[in-house]
Image (cartoon, rainbow, N blue to C red; front, side, top):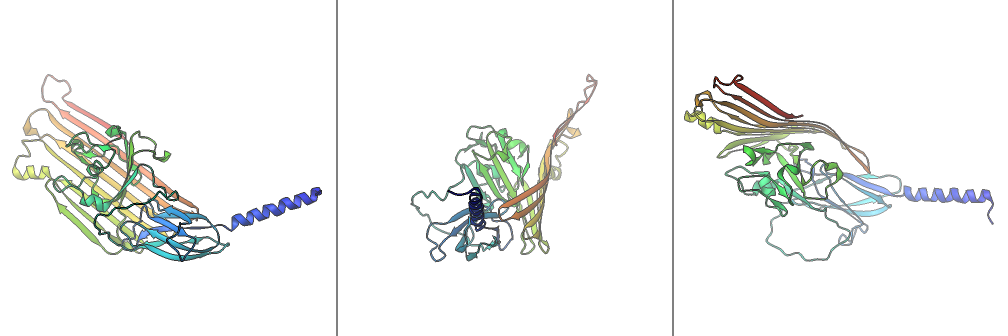
Amino acid sequence: MLLPSQRWLWVVLLTVALFQGAAAQSVISGTVSASRSGEAAIGAQILLYADSLRPDSRPFRIAQSNNFGFYSLPNIPAGTYLLFVRALGFAPYRSVVRLDSSSDLRRHIALDDDPVLMEEVTVEGTRDAAVTAPVSRIMVPADILMTAPSFGSEKDVFRVLQLLPGVKSASEISSGLYVRGGAADQNLVLLDGVIVYNPFHLGGFLSSFNPDALLNVQLLKGAFPAQYGGRLSSVIEMTMKEGTKERFTGAGGVGLIASKLTLQGPVIEGMTFMVSGRRMYLDIIQWAAGIADKTPTYYFYDLNAKLNYRISADDRLFLSGYYGGDVLTSPDALGDPVMDISWGNATTNLRWMHVVDASLFTNFSLIYTDFHFNTAIEDRDPQFRDPEFFSRSRIR
């Protein structure tokens, strides 16, 4: 029979042994980005194999990079492993890593571009319990947006999403999304984490987002996390481009109803920018044709901008913004009443991404959003006491 002092000794020894066993576990973490542009590789799969000589075996740990490219593989015993990273449109990355029981490993990975060109294939296999796909989550890269069908020359993000299963449109002239029976105003629309309350131009005919400025679009049709609370139907989360670090580039286009221009490139070491603008010129055509004073005029505009600064390997600062609106006016020569209606959105997000340690990723945001709908009508009928009417609706 053990004496009380001996019992306490065994308890202390067991506690020390458990602590040493827990301390022997390491964490591999870091970020995944594109080597050419420096932008985050969203949705990349990170697989860790226990046997570095047999990458075709069952992976020991699996992770997926988030919207900022961050990943973490926790609870890894000391030893030699094969780190394998794959993402659509990039060449696979392989690296042998060695861990000891004293420290964690921070590995920032840059993937090389590798476009996928292939014929139709049939894939057959069995379900692997170790690999679980997110429920009701569909990711649409920017390349898909640029090759999708368009109205004239205008690519529309929402019309691309209407082609996905579980999503329906109200009519051919509407870009509203009806996801699994929900209404168009029950969708949560986020642009770089900021709510956009009225994401439409032309009374719902086009969405308010220029595909040239977007890096990635995610549609969550159900089972979305609690962080996306506030809507009933779905979540459309859009991420703007961060700007390429390689060189200064520009792209533009002249379409049937609008023109657009996108500029991006490096500013200084570790800092990149992206600016994209689009404007409809129906009012300019009316003015050139000499009918601007005889018919109502209408136009819309968009402006996207983003600044990305890599402070260190574990700290990045982002400043992104969007400003867009619609303007409908009726000139004096048309007679009474005279009408002036405008509506639009303005958003700003100052975000600091910080990797605290191998297991903790933080994202701090200072967000501003402003939606307005202004109506001004003047009636020159003398029977009205107050010939001017003005109203404003705003969410700020």
